[in-house]
Amino acid sequence: MFSVVERYSIQAEDVAVDVEIIKYGSKPIKYRLILQEIGIGTEAFLDQLRQELVLEVDVTTAEILDPKIIDYIKEKFRDKADKMITSKIPNVEDNIKNYLISILLNDIIGLGKIEYLMHDENLEEVIVNSAEEPIRVYHKKYGWLLTNIIIPTEDQIQNYSNIIARRVGKQITTLTPLLDAHLITGDRANAVLYPIANKGNTITIRKFARDPWTMIDMIKVGTTSAEILSIIWMAMEYEMNILISGGTGSGKTSLLGTILPFIPPNQRILTIEDTRELQLPVSLYWCPLTTRPANTEGKGEVSMLDLLVNALRMRPDRIILGEMRRKQEAEVMFEAMHTGHSVYATVHADTVAETITRLTNPPISTPANLLSAVNLNVVQFRDRRRGIRRTYQVGEFITTETDKGIEVKANILYRWKPSIDKIVPHSESTHFFEELSRHTGFSLPEINENLATRQKILNWMLKHNVKGVDKVGTIMNQYYLNYEELMKYVNKDADPTGIYNLPNPFKEKSNN
Image (cartoon, rainbow, N blue to C red; front, side):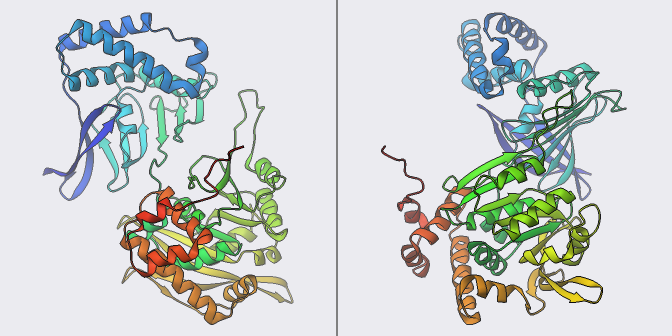
């Protein structure tokens, strides 16, 4: 009944490790990390090396507590371990030596076997529930899987929690049993100690995407279409406000990240997030801001509202709000929209109509008249049965004045049709394209022609498999900086490699 669905390798530092995904019947249920067996003699040898390394490698307390020099500390241990193993086993093969060094590093300054999981880009979550249960992971392709890794003791789990805390200058103890840490790698770690976590000490790590999705990836997997992205692109170029809605795990933040390269390169972008998830091309003029929780004394908190209010004093052209949850945040965000700032944000809601309901009712309670500032609402949906994410609706808010006051209704422009798995037109726009015409000065035929050109560029990028945030960003920049040259490549259906070498004054360093 058990069989291997897929087998692949991950590169953890200098060591290649194989992974097997195992199914029971038709359901993938296990994630098997294939590690070389360590004999009793080798284990005793490693114990001796651990003790010698700790004694011989000089690491100050300041270095241990400084999260920015963890790579430097690793190199100090790596170099010393390499010399020790070579002196004791002169003819050891490089692959065996590298594997032994990785074990030593993971045990002394890392998270043991969890470190191998952290190098698997297919994983979104790594969860330790207790010493009695195997580690579980959330795989991008297969969902929740049970691993073959068990942390032997509760003390070891608490030790890993302490290591995570030290990396970010925090602590976790029986008096402060909760830890929420944003690691320098971008990963988010949460730990809860026993008895607050009744089963045992627990660690949850949400992994940061090392190779974030781009708009081309979104089109390729069917999450959205070139037609929808061309509309979003034009709206963003001409500084219209967009809200992205959806449920948990529907891809709101992922879509937000993929459309930000549509912003012209000469405009200042401020992103405000609880956890650093957005990753923009290096050529954009970007200042990322993240919140900070209060310390153990209840001091030092920097909230999203604090950052949002402060952002208005930083002369931004575009403000990106990771997620809007509270009334005060909504008030400041809509105030920013009405004072001429372009704002993009995400909010929890499953349809355009539900977005209106969520915004105008507690806890957000935005006055209905302010919703006219939102030019476009894009709704994301996650089909858990099929394991896919789709743009579910694209709509506009229609505000009308009635005897009872301002009334806001949803008008769906595009919707996802599950039977054919495509995003199709639904209703004519009564507001958005009129606003777009006002922002651009174009007639409707000119807008349609402009949208067709953008679709052509996106489909050209898709055909030539343009990958990576920076390459996508380079092409978007050339659209604004060197449009005629870019269209030569597009119209000839030429390979885009030459585009990457074109001059970009926003990336060139000053000689002064």
